[in-house]
Amino acid sequence: QVQLVESGGGLVQAGDSLRLSCAASGRTFSSSYMGWLRQAPGKEREFVAAISWSAYITYYADSVKGRFTISRDNAKNTVYLQMNSLKPEDTAVYYCAAGKILTRLRAGEGDYWGQGTQVTVSS
Image (cartoon, rainbow, N blue to C red; front, top):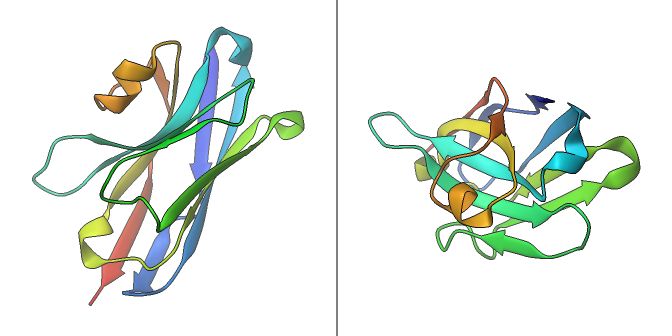
């Protein structure tokens, strides 16, 4: 099993930056990918970004491309999401997710997920 714990959310103004962290524990080797999903008020959960566990290959949703950067620290079993130029539409609960199938993550699902961390961007 895999346990995921997110941190780093908060309340910021448009244009500000935040860095989210996800600490993973357990059988992390069972997941080929780790990433971030988010769910905004009144919307379905959507894919944000993902990274392969064994290689530095990244994937981004079009809505965040050029503004967000996903990275990892294998020694710490931790993934990060650097969010720059935040917009009010980025307001959501952000979930760390892990899974074997990239297409599932990109569809907004994961084999494992954390409790979520709230990101609120005011205008």
